[in-house]
Length: 391
Image (cartoon, rainbow, N blue to C red; front, side, top):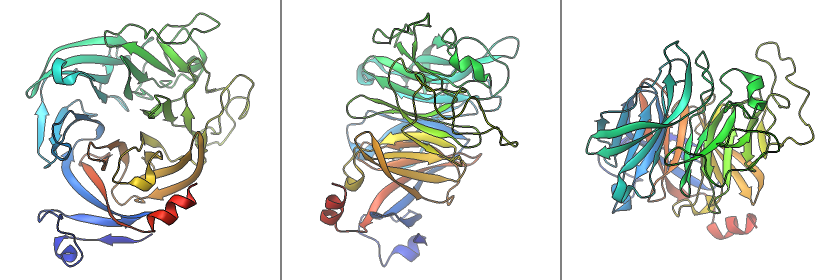
């Protein structure tokens, strides 16, 4: 793969007029594009999730970024970072902390945001919860928890924590918290995808299960969903971590059982021994796509912007294990090709988002994490030929 590491001086003779004088960037090659990767902000402490605030001008965006250490920050298009006071207190144990962020669809009038976080109890146990708050200037007000997953668990594994908004409901992913068998128990939220209203009540459109189930559950049998997004038709897409192999991409069917730990393409860590009964069982969903070995996917986007026109409808996700941006070429509900970009040039990729102007944004997961911006530098193929190839 072409990788041209550049500073401003190295770029001056090839750069278009819009290259800012202060930028230091790299240019990488994909099948369709040469891509400029610009660093917008650094010094973020294990950033976990990002969400764009409404903006009058697409190029003058602002976003909220959660850090696993419990801080919430606002970053603007110039890279200015501002601490937002008043974030909910999150248990910082293992994979826990401040997690997903979502913005109210009526933010321009209600100023409401939603934050998923690991909520601790007096005995040191924790669960995943959603807080609702009002953003006023550089501070959160009226912070209150509207949903808490049941039951509490000890330890710091598999909190889930991804948020998405579908209509007037919040979707929240919940991991198995290291208690595998509870992912098959509809009397717990463990290992499930849930949907609640903005007040924290079960979403009215949630499925009804044959056996008694908690009313917030949309689907179950998940190990640890770390990617959650919607396509233009409102369909729910997720991906989740397998153990040693078996990371999954799923198109969610409300009411369905996704099998963990009864079926999986993964193996037990270290020993490589089998988990459950195999890879298939009647009544349990197969993944749309899976990875063996694991890539540890994180962040999920179905691209719909105009800048990367050759990628419209494709699935983009990060990889923590290999520091990748993964592009899955999609035809309807089928994945027909996979392309891997970046190759650990920037470190672990924690989140992926589409900006209001169509650029792709990435968060890198480290004690000195970065916000990266990807824009097309040039086409690698004639767009007409590429369009015909994708028919």
